[in-house]
Length: 469
Image (cartoon, rainbow, N blue to C red):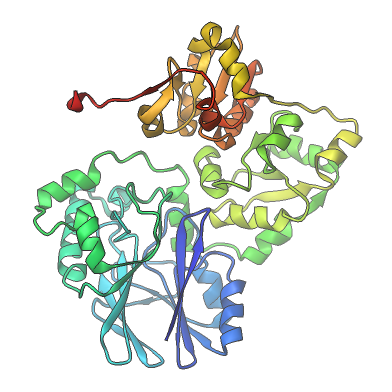
């Protein structure tokens, strides 16, 4: 028996490869499926099943392509109704894998088709559960994503999730290993641990949602409390996962196409494509194409693209570091952005050599903010999450979370310069690019963000919860 967790940090997502006696299953694969096929070939095994825990909202799974390339059937639990051929397993059904068995546990609540796969070892003993978004480490799946599709309230879904956890998962032995679909950083939960594997017994001790003495009413209240609005691309990813999509090879062929500055500019004008610059923040600050949007590859790239670019059908043109073109197109496709039209051949150097206009972001060290603080303190904008801001922030700074920046343009100065910062500089450069595209050019990004500011004499305040006073 071999179990391998294949974790993708950008998406905080775990896919799984299990094999026994010449057979393998893949659980919740990413869209680029060749790594799974190569892994199976290297092990000399055949992929027998592609198991899906539910219709994912935060990424496009590779189930359709992997099934097409290997002939392995796609398996869902009860209540799934995909547009493509799939085996809809019954609750309690067992799938054979070499000397192992995988038992289907229908665990609705996150979504109505949500399913946990229980791995039984060669002796038939419960060994591990692959919980999808039903059970995370430290949390459970949010119950608000499927309410429209199921014509049900989030409170009703939370109640169903409570029953699933108590009836299907918590009775299992404490030594059972928990393999969730996501870890800390995913928008599918709110309190996930940084670890990606744990025992069920430890989760019964650590996870607030698995308290033995918890009533259903308490569970519903705690699980639904503090849920932030889901990213706008989530419903579109669900649709792609349920109805199917173009093969990643087709997307790469179209998207990883080199374009001269002339052709690049023509396509941008004719298609109203978003020019997406995925280089480092410092490189974007020094020089970029006017009205381009920065979201760097070396960060939470795909989730921020999904959060800030409203439509997955939006045409996209890339400014990308040499050698990372396919990576950029692939990571966009992971969250359903399939309409990449090509990349700027030769990068920004070619753009400048062609005599075309460039822009830049004024980026200053935190010490310069310190020198000006008394005069500008009412014009400092913190684009971190509200929870980060409440924990600690610059005195008099205003909080405009990056995810909502387009909703707060009216609160920004139009006649005076202002300052933007985040935790370390990644999100503030995204914010700066969006604001410049919206016509705000008299802004200054704080290099190194709040971490750098704390190393200066700029006054910082800690939030104190009123209940503790």
